[in-house]
Length: 227
Ligand SMILES: Cc1ncc(CO)c(N)n1
Figure 1 (spheres, helix red, strand yellow):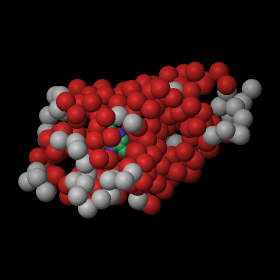
Figure 2 (figure 1 turned 45 degrees about the vertical axis):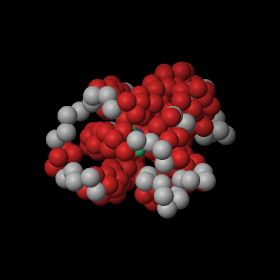
Figure 3 (figure 1 turned 90 degrees about the vertical axis):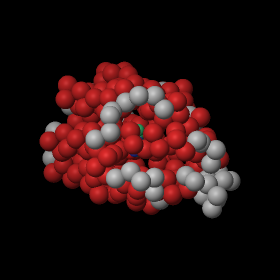
């Protein structure tokens, strides 16, 4: 039996992993960014690690280009790769420049364990599995940040002039990033519609859950400035 496309795959995964999803998108770090109360040292620690994270996520999208089974697959993955290298990393460079950190210093910063764990988990899942396994591992990242951006932008202090994190919130709630997230959802549906069997769902759910847990750990690493 192949999976019905009536419910999109992302929604099905996020519904089944509701606890892990909530712990990720509603983490204390996120709440404090929305209120503007997050200590700057925590944000800065997070942002440097996120730069390293994005370097490895770019590699994971490159792996998705390589694993493409059609030009459509390759274009979709290439869009994700370009969004990271050309758009998202620019935000990090700009924000960090405000604290006197150069792009070269970011690139060579020591990698925290939470960064290692998450990025290598995604890469390993993609190397071991097929394109659907890889896109499921990647999905919480982009779709989650789009949801976080939207929520925080709608919150009372999210985009307020006095919130030090408003440019971060503006970036992830903005049209460009929202389109990348919509693309990630569409990619999952396209791959699932290609004949994904129901038997695969538990394994995909495990991957999705794991990625959500690693996202929550990533926020926690920023909050506690863990290395
Ligand atoms: C840890 C993490 N997850 C998701 C995103 C969104 O791209 C990001 N920049 N960093």
